[in-house]
Length: 384
Image (cartoon, rainbow, N blue to C red):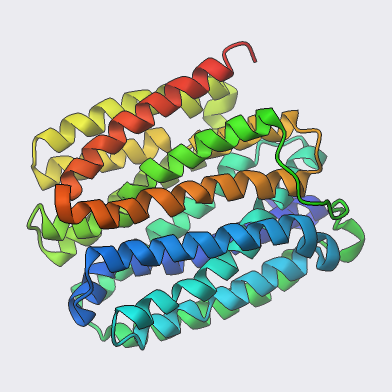
């Protein structure tokens, strides 16, 4: 572990892990508290869908600016710092929300911040992989999932003891500021911040576009489980708020376990199995669990799909970064943009369709969509 603190590129990788863990800890608390906010301001599913849509739209715009202009101009260290500082405003706006409009406004700093640090984290991790020869994308994804998991668990404990939610979201904002100072310590020094020059806006390479489409569909489908599971459990499965929070915890546990073991599994087996075939197995098991309409069995199903789908994103990123002819931050920006485009469409559409078809139908549908998407990815990389 000491090498991670001594090697300049691995220290930069630590800054990427901090940059994703801290916001996802805040996001995990937010998702677990969605039933609270929905009840507090009597918010409709369509308003929540619009929140996700606006957040994703802003994130898409600033991920492109970050990858092509901002990172080359001010460096990855400053971009990560700025992103997490802006994101830290998000919990404060949420807790002061008095209606759906105020709640939706919180998506602005949220999307702005994520657009800056998400692309930058992907680029920094890619550079660290290239310079050290280590498999780091799954590990970085592990910190993403672990942050979400820790946030969900922390939120569960907070709700279990019925502590005022206002205090929690003030603490979350302070936690974001702490992340800012940690990034300043560990990020690449200026002489090692070898991010390539700015590039003009142009369409991604065809092969990168194909990988980006797979990520688009992934975020449009599987992301629904992470973002809507708490609301689904409380509204349609008629569980308690605490059990609804456990749905988020189950998802985070599965993803964290899968991604932290991702590097080991890739070395032990291969990328195709870890990123693809495992996901196909998880989809089948999750779909069967939904058919039982038993919330406890579905919790197990969510945990399993979390494990099995966890390494799809990092494996696709690894395939793409190895094949690109563009510079690494531009490719990272293109992939992030396409991925978050799926997040723009998928969870947002659920907000509108849930009123007509129900959340259960949407979760069942995502199993089929994700199964087909993973199978197509495996066809694309069959000879690689």
